[in-house]
Length: 232
Image 1: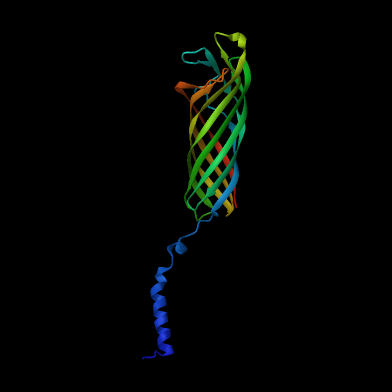
Image 2: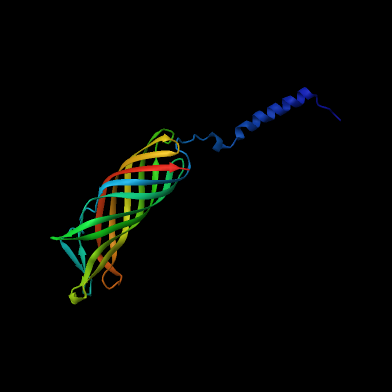
């Protein structure tokens, strides 16, 4: 039997280590982003939020097709909006679920009333320059909005039955472009410009019956959005 010297065995081991070195997992060589990866909570602030009044213009009534149920389409005033956010941040993108609610005064000709806008949204943010503190981003997503108008519905043929709440439901396309600043890997502050297109396609009124809107009611909203996030 041939015995290898300790010096020769050491050389063989060193050569084997050099040959295996390139096999280090590539994940360990990937550049890391500045922002921490993980779940986060946060909120957004939108000053002077309202619908743009493409359909809800304060001068239009909608009558149910084939029925006598009538809905009032008020013009909403501007209110500051706050939105709660839960999400998960990856190195290049994040996915977030959010909820928002604003209470408005509405006008219909010379009359005034109350309305509440709500929406549940699922959005993705896509970041550039992720190894920097300043990261441009694009937000794309969708939502389920609904608008409730207090005493916003009545029966044209039976006005003696009074008024009931009108509720308008639909879906939205959400977009936003802006810049995120990470003063700390766990803390993000974002300033962007958001644009939302809304299509209301269902409604209920004084009778509580759900009916389809044809054509769909289209609305939009836009404005500055300021967001703060904390990653765990």
